[in-house]
Image 1 (cartoon, helix red, strand yellow):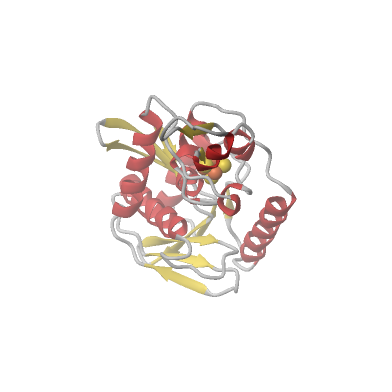
Image 2 (image 1 turned 60 degrees about the horizontal axis):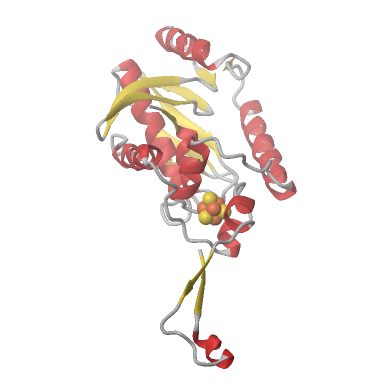
Length: 240
Ligand code: SF4
């Protein structure tokens, strides 16, 4: 099992769906992001680079391979680098009955006192559990990864929201994030595609739209054999 903070995002967005996790895990072909998603991606990148420019001198690991970035992050933390852009962390964990490696790469870690605070840039304007639980869980996972790597308590978790406000996130030892990853791991272990309720607004922006909507399975229930064609109207038809 190898899971990352991105799996948390993939579970919650564009809408919470166990089926999406399963389909990704088994390698079902997924559509490329549409024009709207690409615009959001570009806006997110610009938001991040604007914040990067405001931080002065940083150690930039954005173009470094993930494995190498894990090692270089440890070295830079040991040397108390003031700001590291796109550091990387891994830690071993047992989720349910499965043991594996969990990874994550926050946007920034910033030296504060004898530790670091972790900061991510998000274009979402409302940073809270109701609107964006995935953001809170990603940040707490980064905090947990930092602590597993260094043995130090983090100095804080922050999000630069779409409004430019810096929002502090409370840290609960990574518990909520690990629970979500445990759920994701369970879904990946399933032998069959799990049920996921389809709905136009929740499925339309999802890369598996064609898989779930392109071939609707029609199940007909036959409460009794019809005596006439007119009686066919009482048959109930379900689209799954
Ligand atoms: S199309 Fe809908 S049901 Fe299918 S994976 Fe995406 S969100 Fe889930």
